[in-house]
Length: 137
Image 1 (cartoon, rainbow, N blue to C red):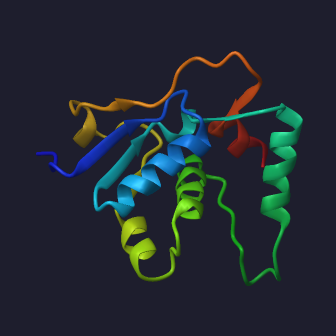
Image 2: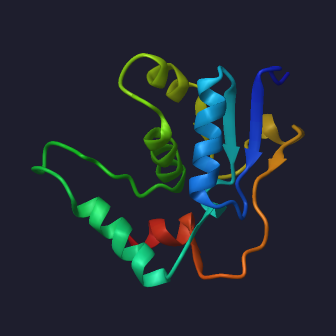
């Protein structure tokens, strides 16, 4: 059975930054946050500039053996964005909150019949979803 202090969010059509800030806030309040369909979250803006920004993030950083490592998986991109909204993800409150965040590419069997929060709506501007970004980087 689903816990009482748990929020299940359907990320289909949700703007990534708004979704991440909401999830981070709920996790800091002590709730377990589950994000489904994370590959369908979107980033708004011009397609070329979005891809350029994510490619720069991926190529930035130290030697081949040390970070920062930037994953291509859509659920990890969403989780890393949420991590950026937390105060300090390495220790203290931020670390505990980050442990309460789960991201899934699709809907697992455990969450098929659970009531979800619809986070997104149809956009009429330029955007790319996380699945398209993860394929290009």
